[in-house]
Length: 453
Image (cartoon, rainbow, N blue to C red; front, side):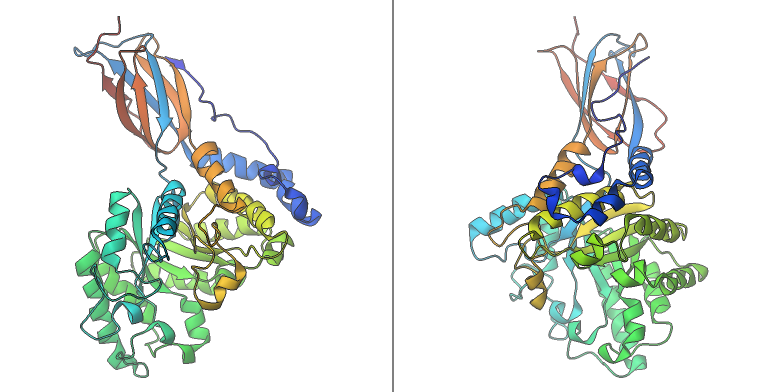
């Protein structure tokens, strides 16, 4: 068997802060943190180990005989890893042109979309939920059926946010706010309704959101029992099939600084035998905390994700805002995005990364002041979007080529995902699709029906 190396297979030890132009705006302390050989080596090593897999294809004729010295070209089409954003303003921008640009920008870098299920806007009137197309307009809350249909047509995996987020300002007026015993039956009915309608259509859900802030600030939330998290996960475990990922989602500080309580909450659920399909990690933060490394240095981030990863469930970065304000804002945002995504993508237990608001002007209320989008208000790519596009669609996509050996086999190592294989000489090629993923030991046997002579 002849083993051909693909164009991007070799691990290159490179300085992470050299990945986007106009880097002079980032402070020297930031450069040193991200150029640290230990950090660079760890990210490169884990990217190679956890985001790539070996693939072998065996080319045979219609009688099953191996075909040697035949040309094979492999080109990656999709990622197994989930790159996402919320889809909260689909179809809601001022002009058809803005909507078109938003959709194209989204689909180019995302294969994962967060859909809004904030109960207050989903069912403002009891018994009259806004699920279907044609429901009353609410900004940043398109009907889920519309969003789900768009995801399906674009091959994008949808995620529901959230089954229950009992913060007062996101809850319907008709629910019981001050009586836990009266509220929980309403909550269970709501979870059951979502499971019945979307359980076979949406494979990832935040079950609950920001549990630690709820405990710390109960006056801002509906009254719920002490075992609220357990009750919600019990209902979700019962109502959703085992192939649906059920996440507990927490804030940036709770998952990066005061980690103990987050860790304890996950352990409590697991100890009860409940299925926890992922630990959601928010990342809404200012640039200063990232540029200074206090507290978000790369070494600290790696240590945190190693610690959370040892709990067992996969990790998801679920909500990201990095401001882009100020003269150096767009360039600094791009630098931070490139470095953070490299680190997150390399993290062994990481399953997905979700930016929050794709474009400036599409955030919640006063959050728009941060200019935390990857696009500007006219839906044009900012430097941060360009940095991500380069990573997702170029650096992290594999192209390989060569000829089969005497045994009809061709091997390559590439980023996990689906591949289009073109086999045969010019004018006589055939195309095949294979998935490259971990644990695939048998060769992909591909049958050529055209003569290669």
